Image 1 (cartoon, rainbow, N blue to C red):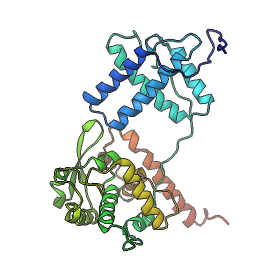
Image 2 (spheres, helix red, strand yellow; image 1 turned 45 degrees about the horizontal axis):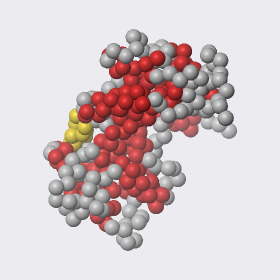
Image 3 (cartoon, one colour; image 1 turned 120 degrees about the vertical axis):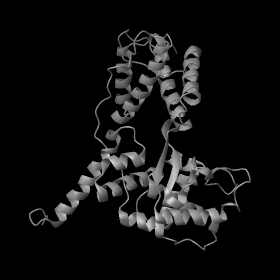
Image 4 (cartoon, rainbow, N blue to C red; image 1 turned 90 degrees about the vertical axis):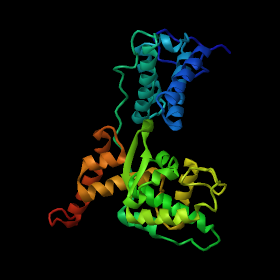
Length: 324
């Protein structure tokens, strides 16, 4: 059955396969992100998925349009459509950011004269604060040895503890952790590790004593698993670089086996690191540097967590704040 045409100014649009020209444009954009800007595979995949979705929406208009012909009112209608379908303001903001970056690239290469996404804002949504472990929960996760000796490979348990101690000790991103090579540990004895952050930007992060001991223990047995020419610090049972997905699975497994009542994912360790350091030091700039945030605005979310902690202490301790 033929699709019923909608009025030219209608917001109606479905998602169809993009036209070949747009597929080629998205591929070229992603190739530059990967090869010239040195974006991570995760970032490239996200941009590709987001811009492909825009091309699909454009192809699904009553009168299909290529990406080069879209205008601001099309972008606003797409955002409204997605919001009406239940997509959160936060998710739409991410899509708009990807679309905006794509059009900046396209305009610079002789595409449309103006960026149609400029000035388009996502619907507001409540700010969600990152979930963190309490210091006691972090201690249980890292100190617990409840399932050692039950038939599990002790070398893998040793590797897991080194990974999670380093994760929490230094506030790494998951991609930074799995991307570590042996040569990043050149100054481990001095309490430092070199990591490559977003856009391959290097930074030095501090490493605590517990993490250094755990890494030394892992290095003592790593050679039994790693292939001879494998540079990765953390390797799988097969001897190759450990994937992000496997790290997440091992962390979730460890948390459940140790009886933590919250779902623990890798980024929660990074959030916990930032929150706990900020609570103890109050030094927002230092936390920004350790996290590798380009803007301090990204780090300020942890000040809200710190205030929540102070508010709980106040409510529990102040004579006039205690609830009956």
